[in-house]
Length: 388
Picture 1 (cartoon, rainbow, N blue to C red):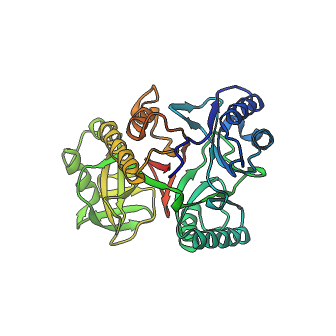
Picture 2 (picture 1 turned 90 degrees about the vertical axis):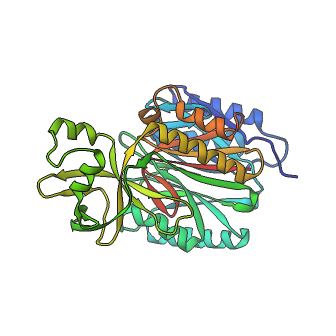
Picture 3 (picture 1 turned 120 degrees about the vertical axis):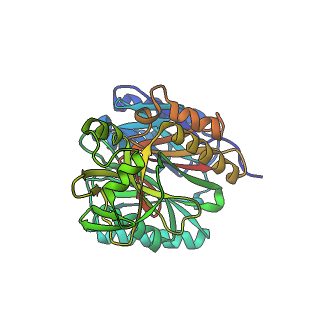
């Protein structure tokens, strides 16, 4: 019979990092069962406490006996039902799994440490049969010198992993957490055996306003034509505007418009959402914050609270169904543009999530600079992982 006991979980809004860490540690110790201590903890901390990461990890380790840690600093911390934005916060969940079902990796700071992480992941995946990789990335770093965008795919492919996680966020420093404490400009995380009981899902925050079309590019990040029609003409038509729109009307219509790139071969309709970086009405050009090439597919989409809420509810219920039993804990990584910026104040995004997965499930996570699922970095999404 599987264990239905919720993972130990605690959080604090104390305005001092050490005070918050001690309060969280005390709560965790009260929830921990007799016997071996959990091997690894997930730690999410306000960017206001980023410089105190070392001390926080030391306090938590000493008090709980949990040896390994991974996590990230963020502008917004997810703690149970709370979305703690731009304020002191600390949230922890202990992965109370068998020791051979979880293992940290990293921090990855260069090519050599990347190869070590790949070897760890490949060996773990082989022993476990299949593995999930929790990944945290400091967006100010570039361990392989190839841009951060390529690293998740390389790690997933070489290590045999399905990745979940995101890029840290903050006003200044955006470090990740590791067992030794703060890890700046680095990548790290944890490996989890899928046989321990895991289900994941990705929820989009935008809905398409037209079909995907084949594009022709006019330069770096510039789309010239879509299905042989000027890209700007396609956009104006899908917005219901004339070929020579009023400037104020156009500005208002573009406020929540983005460009989506469909992912070929996905199990269900899936796409990467990228920012619309500029328009040229006279020349018919549209700019996108992503490298694109002739023959790629693209479509315009709109950020929309109603469709985002419906998709989050659908995704979370589907993950809960696939898990097949009540979740013991959840990791949720959401885009900085979601939360109160999309769903409104009052922790509404997490209310939808909890209603879908079950109100007693502990949830930790953060609001990210980019969300990671499978082998790529998304935008405007929510990435959920349920542990059973």
